[in-house]
Image (cartoon, rainbow, N blue to C red; front, side):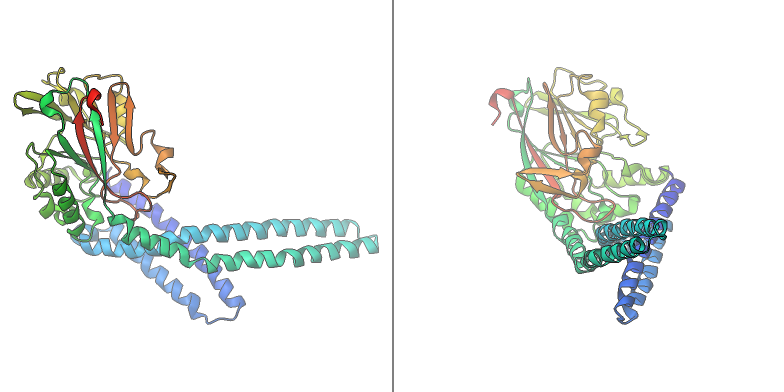
Length: 426
């Protein structure tokens, strides 16, 4: 995506945030005035809103974030704490305003009926009485909705705060068996750790990545795979996680593919990012492959560049070139839509595809052991394991964040797979 497209995208976002601020604060201002409270209860919010939108524009429309990634990250946390809860507050206010509009329409209709019956004195009096009675009966309900909007205003801020400072760093380990037909006995029990969507720019320090690295070390993997999106938009963000990425190690190596966000920059910056990833000791495979050997047995590891969301950098033929299709094959492909697009039922030599990209939606709920998120509405395969005959797709929920720096009920994921043959599963 070009910088000009990003500028248009952020200008639209800024405009929407201005509308959100205006709607919520204007309603608060009316509430305060009707109760003769201090005018500073709303004036202070208008001033704060002006400061917040200016800060948002500074970060998104200038080079400030690229030059000051940590400072920009901290400012963005404050900004999202300011804006996100207003979405919930505005819903309550909208219900209140729609209710008032409906009541106004009903009142007008009654008034019209009164005018049409003006020749009949008793009829007109009765209609006016009906209108007054209606207004008196619904006024308490309308006032209740208005008060409810402000009484519950604090709850969204608490929820957003929990998502930013609690769930966002609550790294969860998922363990799965990967049953692969024809798996050589030498690879039985091989442990692979997958992480995805690091988004280094979403962390203010290297501490979260240090925790991830320590968790990975405790899992004693034979191989580590990273399926794309190392940064948000700038190669400089990699500096936040680079020291810990460099410490990752496994007997069979640390391998990576790239994601869509790794392309959201100039070609020169993209090359700089790839160099940084490789300098961290990660064997970055771009439309390429490796053959891993254990006691003479072989396992294919292929990897494509990102394809999806308007990007078409993946070259599956190049990624599979020279491989012995009799060997088990694992493919790294950042975007899970590639599975239906070019893998499932089309290339039976690929036994397993590992993806990320969706973040599991970042925000969702847990119900009876199941995760539910808006990502379900966007992606056919959005989180966890999917199978079709002998082929497997796994969609990692991601480690970092993009957009709002929060997670609710969709914890950041570290996945450990144990390779096995179907007859030995479990």
